[in-house]
Length: 162
Image (cartoon, rainbow, N blue to C red; front, side, top):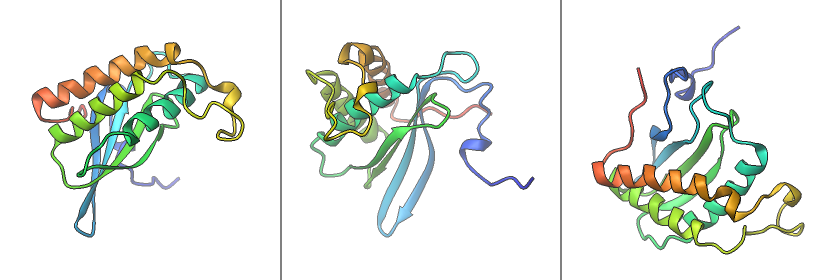
């Protein structure tokens, strides 16, 4: 069987730790699109995210990130990885790692302050019965905030293991 090249498939998942990674930066005209790997679980060591928790985090964090008032950074996409060990976030703009970390931290704080899970109704969500509560996802939001604050402090994203 022919292997399809993929940055993600080149990462050693046996030694991968939770963190914020950048597997790709693509240029679209004069704008950079940065793919951010928000890795929440150690593959094969930690329990993976349940569908319900991933779905709820998607609603909550996508809302928080899109509410960040930034003239430099735009959210293109936020969604769970198929392996359920984290999320991919695609950001467009010309910005430093520190600025991206700050953006993620601010969006996570906004998300954590939401009183309820956004769009938790049949009109706005095609599977709202699986959404959990804010209390269920706050521990994950705390972990993401700590990871983002680490990027802000160091000025760089985590590096994938060899």
